[in-house]
Length: 329
Image (cartoon, rainbow, N blue to C red):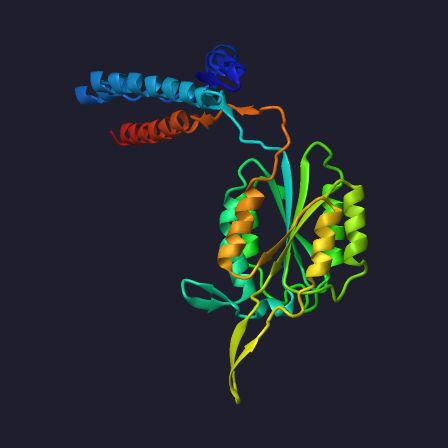
């Protein structure tokens, strides 16, 4: 429906009449009389019929401009039908490892070898886009853990900041315990929502002020559920002076600790050896049971004040042209 946000602004409409009626007029200087023997000059002094019509047009445009300006001030807007907001009641914090080992190229995207962080970004992008109705936050950790994005419905910003992350940005080591501790700090006060930490790493805890298991105990006491993802292939072919060698690039992955973290908080541990498995893991995380919350509605509002304001501007240009033309006429 159509409505005005500030309808009281229409009280300004009679303001020009009040000014004209109550404000004293400025006195005009008396010109000395001059006798001119040419009839054309007398006609120019009294005003021709065309000039009278032009004056009426100017007065009409002035009134119309004022009415348009007052209408724009009243903020006309179009209010649409109520739309239900997709709110699920889940608070998800995504913690991504940026340690030096994430540069190992044991993943493939479209047949091309890529490092672990690139594969994580590739799959996580779709996961983030599917989080409509959830609040999502982002933690990046290496030797230190940093809150890159607090909980927000702005999924585009979360995705952008993840895409801009670089290996080694938070240090070359891995502080899993500190990442969990930071997530606890950011999620512990949200009692009315499902609080989940998705922690993705390819190694073991090698830095930080708190051990992963101790951090997991604190998380469980605050009702924070942790889903851990161990990333990295089990086998990789590497060329050396002695020919092709098969190595295990994930020998440093501490699956035992990651499993213990998940189980102690009521979560699950997943193993991602390639992008297909990683995508399946994210699809499973999509099915996390949301918390029922009150349905929220929104009425989309479209502001229309620019139309009368723009028309008033165009009319003001026309007025200026008419006044200038009359001065030279």
